[in-house]
Length: 219
Image (cartoon, rainbow, N blue to C red):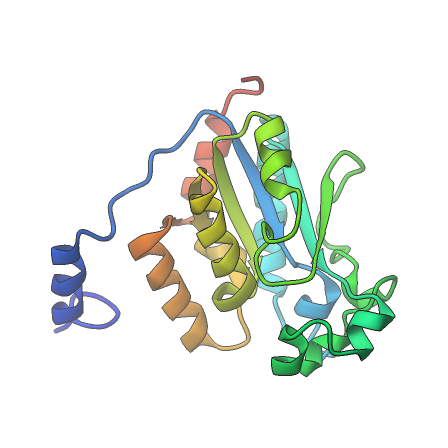
């Protein structure tokens, strides 16, 4: 019987390549909640899916993080009319359903089931990664953070892109599996496999709660 998701041979190939080592968890984490906005958590939108379980798990993570003084950053994708209706954002040629993510619309608002606070930073982005074309790296550095706990949607898209850029920006990365979701199981599972192999540690929510709960409130 196969040992892992893709079988013993795949496990052996990845082990030989030296993938899958554990990341070094830092002393000052931040939580980055990627695009858990109505446009992604409400299946009524073209870009949406029913991510109620993901929202609930992320809410629990946020509450624990706040008790430990962990900084929280939310992201949203929001386009101006010129961007949504025009041709300047090439990503929208590939994913035209995302043209509904317009500035000021309910689609780009953070899901109200999440405990967002006034002190939480909101990063508005135009692409998949929360780092590309934004000030997120500077925000995390300014807060003294060395580790990023990434949640959100979708696992195969904006979550994975954010994870890749986070580790390339010098941060250790943890991804609680219960706190991210996708429109289909296949892309979700494949993205988690890839993240675990190359970019960060995919961990259980309970593990993430324990780590955040032990984090010091001050650097």
